[in-house]
Image (tube, rainbow over all chains, first blue to last red):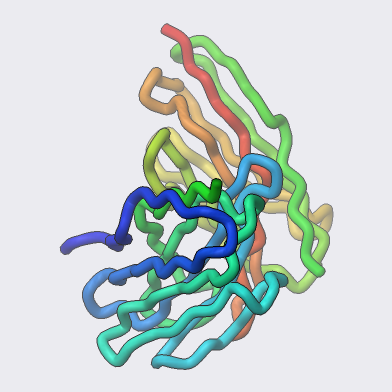
Length: 114
Length: 113
């Protein structure tokens, strides 16, 4: 069974631009969570989607948003990019919603904001 | 909110030695504790997890112990091998919808041969 895939793998943007990242979960998984990973803050939860609905949101500004499609694929968007948004963005999928469901991570999208 | 502390931040061992990584959590309602291994250029990979109704769980060379009274849990790796070198993260969460995994800051394990 194919794992979680994320596209693109690498991205370079400039301040003020916006970016959209994509995540395809493991087949049959209905929940997708997004995390931001930085050397200073570690892994921080962004949001979780289940059945096309946002179920939970972390402590990030409104510039960070996401959505989930009927096939469970998910996208996250960051508008008005700031230098501090440079990070590895990880997507994780699980069979059902809730943090206690085993989450499988993708390889991440590395975003560099110049 | 939930906070997870992880120690040590770096750990160097010789091949064949044991390695122990410890985490403490603050939310007494947490009842799910996974451990992830992250290699360079890859996403975190689940290596073992434990739920609050179990005190210890073992999978070959890896074991996790949980002490709910003291609110801490540990990862034990025996007979370490160079391929065990990676960053290890602990996490904690409540087993209910609308909650998120809270991660420790990670431990960089180096196994030298």
